[in-house]
Image (cartoon, rainbow over all chains, first blue to last red; front, top):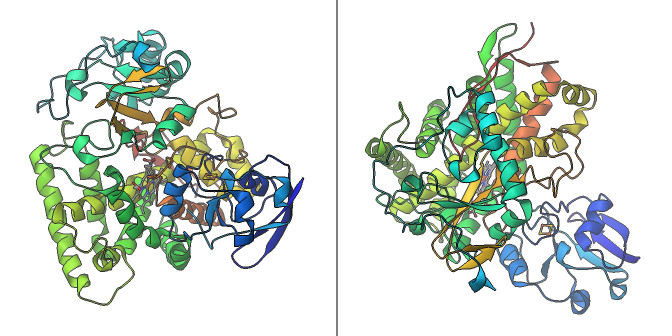
Length: 106
Length: 447
Ligand code: HEM
Ligand code: FES
């Protein structure tokens, strides 16, 4: 299990234990973390799992794929550190990582 | 290897624009009558290639699902050649995973208007209305981003109380103990009020928006509908009216409505007239038929499934989940179409450059391979949000939150007022393979 802290736009924090290898959208949806819907089931095809990765964690979360990039580019709330949570798999190196959410997503 | 695949298209698909107008008559099965039972029986055993599923017959009778089930099982990516002198032939994509693969591959599967656009029947090449749903990147992205903020969650929060007020007015005006048409009195009424609000359009003329939406999706061939030229004239009339509105707003302070937003955004303020019209039609149609038919569909499904209606009354907190299930079950847009930009392989079939590829959302939403008990309407279905009705990828519906919000408010307000609304006879359906919906549905609210 990897401890991930999902932080809502209003600052509310949700500490969740995500099984290693599971993607971080699933981790949120299965634990009813509000603000991550995961409408496409993890295909980088809906952007309802959009989140921001603090700079100190970017080395372990990796780079956006091409399709992920195309989806993020369309969001009003896109930032250089935007990712789709479904495209990141929990690993031991992410223990204690914070993942921040935009105010809304669609 | 792609080169070893056989070409399974029975006729070569013709280049765009090569279908002459008026269209040649269509071949239909020779059946004693066209009641749903006869048609379903026919679809269960007819040779797959004999059926033209684009024929409105299968849609106004709601019998198409029998054919799609067979395609999903027997030929999940299948070329329709029946009546190809009318539609040039098209690929049917029927399984969830294949639809997802097409929808997320905009590099190969184009939405471009000049290649025919996003519906099974090509856009009229003499009357192309460029709109971002029928564009590829990069232009698509620029225009989509210009519209995005108005339907963002933050902006919608500001509209919520207004939507609720309008909904309350409409529901409070409904008769009791009397049969009336739900489509006209509720579904159309609510969506037209909402559109007028979004566009900053005069409320008293809101039904004009409904009218234009209906015209822009109407089939010029069907008796009673305006023909091709008349239709163009009506849409040009719409353009004139909106151009006046645009001219008023382009030089005024931003007012927060859609016309004002388009007029003030650098990405859209210099749009040529046809493009302005295209994007208007897109927003009017996008926000109109789809939501309207979900409003009608929801009530119909609850009547067909009384146990679900009981569940809802017992637990109104299910409304939000039910809204997603209604949208899945209705699938208000039965398909989106793409054009292949290169030869490619899909579901083991060789697709040629230039072929039409039709993603049947209505079938993907019933795919047993991905969904549990897909034929059933279950308001507390787990993960109900994971449906195909809004599409996926870069063209995924930009208005999805707005649609969900309208439906959620409607059902919350209905439950506060009425114990039951009864559908008194089978609804009349729209004869279209694109807009899946209802023309008329008679209901009664017990006195
Ligand atoms: C239940 C209601 C609705 C359904 C089922 C629906 C369905 C769809 C579908 C299937 C697409 C194309 C997705 C794709 O190609 O992958 C789409 C796109 C679109 N919809 Fe909706 N829609 C609904 C409501 C709305 C509303 C309320 C609006 C208006 C604000 C709207 C505006 C649009 C626009 C502008 C696009 C084009 C997006 C793009 O090309 O990037 N829709 N919708
Ligand atoms: S769940 Fe759809 S993009 Fe991540």
